Amino acid sequence: MKFGKVGQVLLVSAIALVVATLFTACGTITGATLTVGFLFVTTNRQSPGQIEVYEVDSESGGLRTIPTSPFPSGGRDPIAEAVSPDAKNLYVVNQDDNNIVQFGIGTDGKLYPQATVNTPGSFPLAIAINSAGTFLYVVDTLQPIAGCSLNNPCPGDVAVFPIDKTTGALGTPIANSSAYPNYWPLMVAPSDSSTVLTPTATQLLANGNNLYVTAYNASTNAGYLFEFAANSDGTLTPLHGNVPVSLGSEPVAMASDSGSGFVYVADKLTNLISTFTVGSTGTLSLQGTAPTGSMPSGLTLFNDQYLYAANSGDSTVTTYSVSSGNLSRLSVSASDTQPIAITVDPRKLGFLYTVNYLGSSVSGYKIDVNSGALINAQHSPFPSTVQPTAITGIPHNGTVTN
Image (cartoon, rainbow, N blue to C red; front, side, top):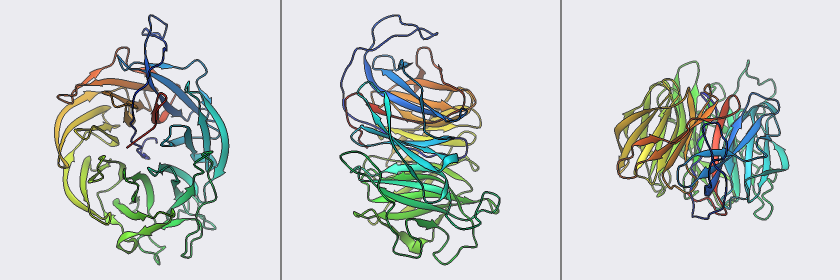
């Protein structure tokens, strides 16, 4: 994730404890803490990019980088990441090298590079993993078409990589039975290649049966939402004949509730969150909208009760209560400069974190579980290397669930 290109991955699971470290505002040790999980934050200023690993303190929500952090991302401009449901593997998208790097995750949060695969198209920007941990979906900005470039753009695509459940390794992208081997085109209709739609984010529902991809047309400032049925063999079936739902101007972030009944989409140009109800086949119906701050770039839910939007334009976080998919704005909290990604702590104990691109930091908050209000975590914001782009995490000695 980064400004204008955000993909959102939701994380959760159960509890384990380990003796860890302690902090002051300068990061020095002051007393024992208990680690509830690890957060992985990509940064893109260096070449190769970096992955910072933070321990999450179970009592305060404070963060401390592990001693061996950061780790090289295996390519330039890491922009998106996802963890396997068993919390054993991290997958990082390096946009400028068109690759996905698999990392094994140690019990201490350390990362061990395993393998690198190339995406079919170019400039990948978002990934998601199904709940069974058997398929990884990646969205490319450009299809693998001769002569296609950022200066001469073509529509984007979605590719599906099978995941070896034993090793976490990614296999060869699954063949598409249409005229597009190894990827699914993101076009207004299968026969229409004249309208260039640039994808912005991808989201899987908790049950793993549907995939949604947001996109926009830069020439008309029109937004779109592609709907796919995610089949058991990994293939995708476009819904509505691959005609996307019209949606705002530039939808850039998504979130879904644990019961897969609602999908929330943030549009950074209209400053709105749209709530969609999910039909029996996965098709979406607009239920309503709610205003955000300036240029929302990330969404996350806490226990399906509260939704939080990171607003990159005015450096705030908006809190909403959730009732049957309806959003009611409760409060607005300040963050460090330009938050572009957001997540709750890996065990959903009640902590929230934003990645602040221009602030080169991670802001931490404690969630009041009764009101949803945010309270700054002690010593927040926590320093990051310059230009952090994405955040995800795992519980300590646990598994990731939706």
